Length: 97
Image (tube, rainbow, N blue to C red; front, side):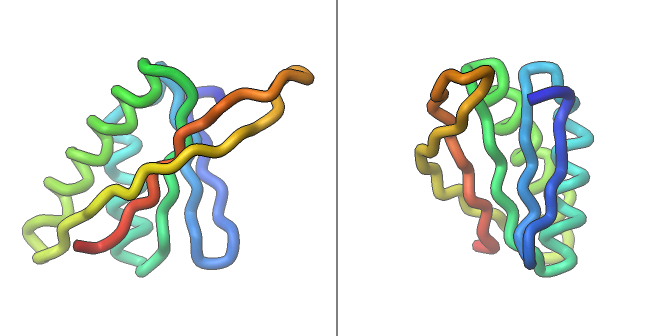
């Protein structure tokens, strides 16, 4: 999944987060997309990536709170093929709360 990849589809920004992703960068990307009224989906594989994603979401909440915006997280499962092998991913849908 690399160091963090942002993909924009229609009005949804997908962030692929790895265990090496920077939580401040994740938080900034989430906050920017939410301010632009985009939907955000954070995709992770593994505990380390989930840890970085959750820290990024907490940071985004801090960036958005002064503007009266709070985030809620709706988790779900998905699958992706990596090197010919199916892997389970967790998708975290972020919504204004």
